[in-house]
Length: 495
Image (cartoon, rainbow, N blue to C red; front, side, top):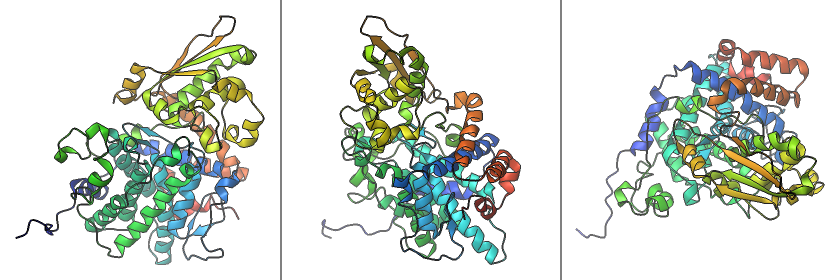
């Protein structure tokens, strides 16, 4: 036989794909902490989506592809009157959730925002519930939504623990697509074969580049990329449910698989490994760990590596607010990931550019005592030249301890330290913040403020009585879990 032939024996599905499918099919959520955290995550994520509706750059992207389209049993987009097919609804919900960079975060070898998956989960759950009612069947409940959230968080977060996609230039929304595909195919009633087929298609899709997240190309795509990933997940799940075949060795196929094409060959961390070892690495299986340890963005709509920096800046504000013109330099000690991802100099072209600039997210609260979504807009930036003057005086240094503790499983700190020096030789104390307010170590302090954030965000879009109804429901774990999904979504409809 000629050696110039390919072995066409169809393999079993890659173990990574099988493990994900088995997890969503068999795992029983029993952690009260995970369910309680998922409830808080649901509130926070929906609130972020409602707040984003204030911004026309977001809302211009919402709605059906063809105006006037009527969708029977369509999925609703919270805070709007839109009724869409589940694919576009997932896009719209995911877009609003992520627009302001204010929803939860996971930081490890890879980072991301696991609540992005709620776009797919809610769209599919709402549509399925209405279809079931139309067929005289019981709808899904919000317990189903919370469990799907826990599983999607877990899939995205566990893969991210030891596998860095950003180091090979790939965007973390790939993991949103994979996680969402798995859980919504299961929600649709998919078999093990159908779930694996859908997941394999998600891997074969490859990944968006991170180009739109970094200088000099930072732009608004980073605000809708996750919505795009969730909508693709719903589409792939639907195809699998129609019987579309999968690609069993989507990851491991020699030359043509994800590992060889997109992950290993250019991965500097793996370049010296034997080819057989250039695969994903896992330190633990799937459970409910990620939801239990998720990071909430409570205080600031800012890229998470800057959360503690913004908090330190607010602490320093009273000491520097009357001496801004007398500042000689601002020294920032931070971790390697913050330097690699969000430290930048030079002009900032748009709001998306500014909310991914460490120096900008320090300058604003130093000068004004707070950092809100409005502070990134052109009108604010262009009328306050002090922001760029302060940026020009900043020195950003890596602290090796901060870098190490960022990755330590029992810490997962996101530390920043700031000290301001004045022209007369005086200086402030150095303010060090190890853990952001949304960290698991600060849950007791953070959850009451997260609830206030949710109330505030509800009020930007809904009438007072409806806000109170929603908040009261979301505070009651048992009542929320037993609420039909379609009834829950009814509460967020704007006529």
